[in-house]
Length: 381
Image (tube, rainbow, N blue to C red; front, side, top):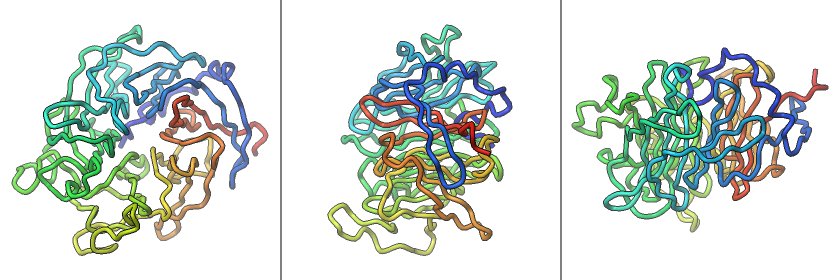
């Protein structure tokens, strides 16, 4: 299995160190198990949402206000041209980006964005080719768009995870209209599964369309902004925003209902109860939940060589408390939060990615956002 991030190039050589020479700042931070070096690779990014590592070690970054850029040797290059029309509103704009597993051959990328149409805006997914001069994308094709657009700027999702067969999973928020997450004829509040060309895979659980839209893989999600495959077991996991409390980690399995808003460990922002409680037959329980909420962004499951102490751990970027949460699976497979790193030091953390050399890459969500690289401090044994 491949996540939609840099694990497609896990066999590559180390990222060249040239970019480190241009870092604006470097800090050393002691964590529970290891001392890390936090380098600011670039600043001046406007709400950077996602990062990918290109084969030569440069970084491909999306900015929510509809810009995609390359950062090479510490220099932030001019925006890449050729993006489709993107509706930038509230939490919407240009969101995730992923490299095709055969990028070195076909130059194909995938990205998600909010788009406008009859009825409002909603989440869409695109494929495109990154030109060899890296100044533009071409062959842009919309391969998915949620079926019901609506007003408002909340809860678009959206992450991309790529399966071993090259098919794509895309996470979709409920758009701030909670009832839509239980409407199986509405894409909102779901994980959808499509082929790279936008067609539907044969193994989709509702492929006949009788009881649910055929692209739907799972339902009952509020706003999953993190999603990845675990390369060790091939399973798909999400992290999702709850309301006031009830942020969740979920194991995503075909055809299942994850309960929102019928069951939740959170409350409405008014303090009122949502749904019927925390459990109902036929609805899935989270593997872990946070209360109070940390407002989770990206999710990585660590299998890099730089930090063997973290092998198999979940790493979750958090917006609200401005931290990186590290969670372990105990001997019984239960997920337990072990520590909160970088708390408050670098602002709101949006995405977290394991780079090919095992370092972490993190984007910070701000008007003057940054790309950070977390590596092992030189004096750490």
